[in-house]
Image (cartoon, rainbow, N blue to C red; front, side, top):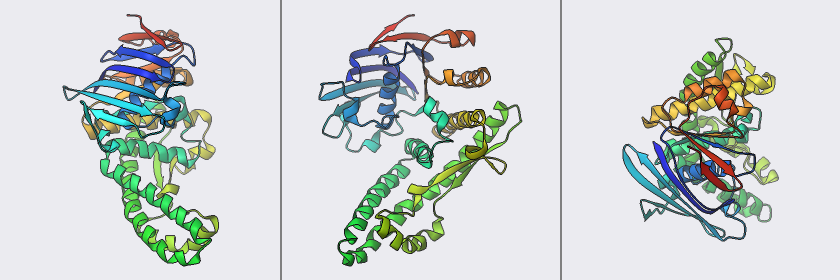
Length: 361
């Protein structure tokens, strides 16, 4: 999997940009707030249809413009593909693959597999459960279109059920229709629960080995799925939560309340781990994600490292850089010193200054 080139028009702080990339390691360096992360975001958007920042399309379009364009050329299994994305302020984005518009954005998933690692990911353990669910969903949607279908329909059903709960407050007779949404919630939610359970089991095996190497055998990290409700109890607990749901006007039971635990034996890393331990566990998780994508897709994903090296000590930097291997990688940083001091090999260097990019080699 290789990203060959990228073109941007009216995207963030770029009026117009055209870049050719190397198949190996591409470095984008420059001061903060110059546009380095915007380039990585555009690549990620073309693989997932979403911004890693959670930004809406209208926030991505350049100031005072009504639309933005992204074009990316990739090579997958030695076959070239082109992805065109048209972002609009007040309409859904348009996406085309090899010049053919796609009807469903989910058709894009799997064409360009990516692993994105940013300083925010170092907080994935100590932040709230929403951060960990987001990690699960973003990765699983890339790897499993069936999961994406059920997740999309689950979220729609959840929204409709919550809307009905608000209406029931004014008209109690509508309570008899709640079962319709319960049935759909259980149908789609059951697939989500089972898929997350299997995913965490698979990635746990990889993360355990990586973390043990990272810590010189001093720590043994395990991931544990913490579902809000077990599959066999889903229907029963949903019914028992009716009065609470009606009172709060939200659905309290389902995989939208799931979590994932990080444990050293019986010790919860989120609650009792030091900041260093939490960061090492997060690094192990992202490297485990990288290995799992390679295992499932039978190819190397594209790795996006957004200013991560400055957040890691020398030992973790070296482990991360040595783990890249033959993977096409994009690294953003404020200066080249940290890479030079690590004697790290890089293939192409870009200097980013106020929305202009200059190749230096």
